[in-house]
Image 1 (spheres, helix red, strand yellow):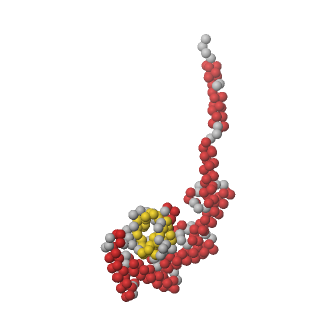
Image 2 (spheres, rainbow, N blue to C red; image 1 turned 90 degrees about the vertical axis):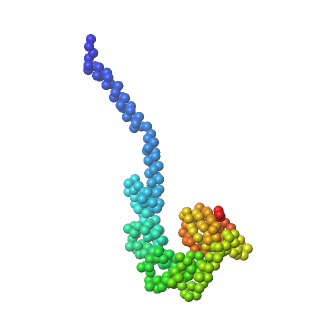
Image 3 (cartoon, rainbow, N blue to C red; image 1 turned 120 degrees about the vertical axis):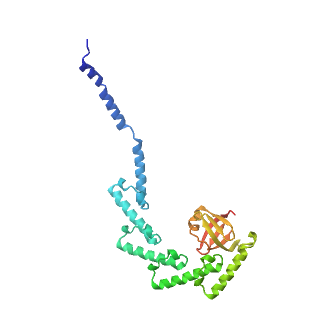
Length: 266
């Protein structure tokens, strides 16, 4: 007897439906590791957003309306903190400031610029257009004073603008340059500064170069110092010709009034 095609088809398809249902149940009821990871990532993202410090790292599309409001408030507060230092105009997001806050920030930037200018050490960084006429005169005096200090070390003739020196300063600078030239011609063991009192500190040094983002400091006597990692944020900003006092495992920058821990490696 020939098989009935309809019965054959019915018998073949009957187990298929339960199998499909079983597969569907397995996929929908089993724990999805990705969901757990997503929850963790969302929590980490929320913490990042609510810190207000890293707007570019915040995935705003993951936030609820309430969290978006909180994140925006946090970003504005953190931005205001940065702006009010006056030190980082390029990092200040002015669109996040109210008109009153913008006025405070402008005042902070003017004050910070005035402070930088009055050191006389950073001509390139000084924005003279933000200074008053009286402040420009003060800055000119500071720059002349700083130039004279550099010249009178005798160590960096190329950095010395002799046109800004008085006749007496010119004579003193020439004498200082001769002393430095003579000192450099001596054997290495006979160079260096002088001990001050019983503290074990040695004054009379200055920075020849700063390398590796403040990790390595080379002094005028040829000695090389490795600065502790925790202090490199300070030493990275130290400039050549700054006066240094060596105290055992410390370098004291008397120009910047900063001290770092360091180890002599040569």
